[in-house]
View 1 (cartoon, rainbow, N blue to C red):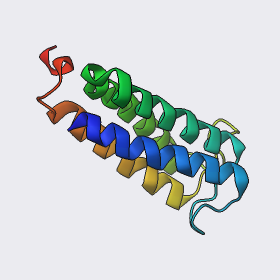
View 2 (view 1 turned 180 degrees about the horizontal axis):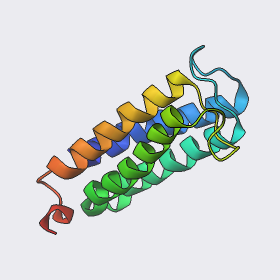
View 3 (view 1 turned 45 degrees about the horizontal axis):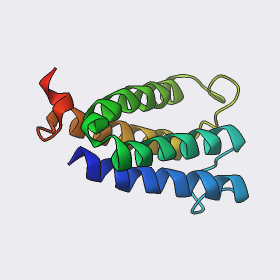
View 4 (view 1 turned 90 degrees about the vertical axis):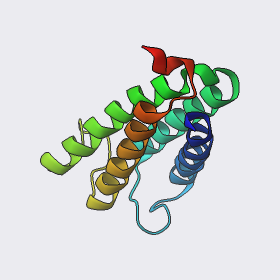
Length: 119
């Protein structure tokens, strides 16, 4: 299951990153600046690469990225203004980050199919 989630969310994040670099707001909702768009593009490409070539580590990668995205989400809700002066911080972005974090962490910690779960 973690491999499938990595493929699906990797594609979504990579497309959103490219879209954010070309125009904003993405889908008329998410106000993405260059830094946030590049972050999504890089995370999406990481997820796609893991799903394609290193599927045994996909659960672990989802856990790590889930923690990173959760920190960004919580930081966004708590701190007014851009995160670290670089990442766009809107309520819609924060909610999206929170959803991604919950999905990544849930799948990363509940997937029993990968060798990464035998820690």
